[in-house]
Length: 308
Image 1 (cartoon, rainbow, N blue to C red):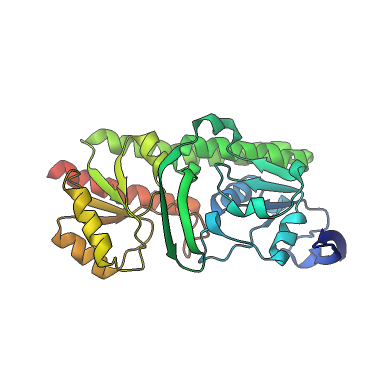
Image 2 (image 1 turned 30 degrees about the vertical axis):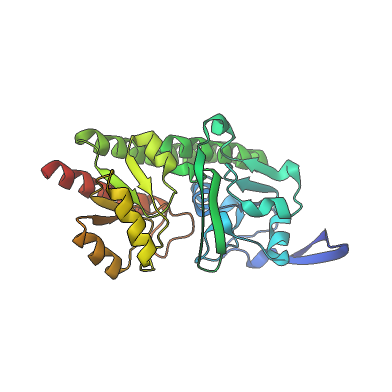
């Protein structure tokens, strides 16, 4: 079964043929609402709450940071097909200002804590990967790393999918309740870890841990290093400058760091651990399993700090 959707793009009428029968295996799709999402955490929360009763659109390649993604016209059309568009808020999706989307479809999942957004004090620009050059400035946007906030974002998703499929309200609320318990577990585990010992001085490979830092009282200073790249001479020099008045003993990475970086840090007395924000779909596991591994990694940091 196919349906037609019409859009105006650059003054031309475009007709999209959407083959609903091929959108998911084993279930008819014609009557399923379409929800587009801005990043993987929102995709995961929506899947947990709505299951197979919603079709989810998330066209961002796995090797691209969704916060700095720039859609092609055909990808913009995918968002325009949606019945609702779930945004992360905190100026996460930089591409929104360059396209036209129906405002009535936009859902800022972090609206409930908008007054608590964190402003990044220093502008930092660098270049890496397929996104090219981008800047870390304005508002901190990895809001879900405060898991109390993540629960509020999941609640906003619940309200959206109930509006789209009201006959499934009871099921969606039950699913949300289970998701909330899982997010509470992560939140409580992190609070227990940081309460055990004095808080170590941490260097973050990227300025993406602002909400994690605030919620759990961590000592974090950030640099601009990519896990897959070995820092250049200037980056090592900048780190040495930081260490003069900030005696860090651990670096927290977004992903598995390059072995050469790990070895050089060890010579400086700095160990490495991964805390993956999982903004995009992980190669293995899912949002919850990655966060559980993050907990174990951070636990090792604090346990070793307490033993020193």
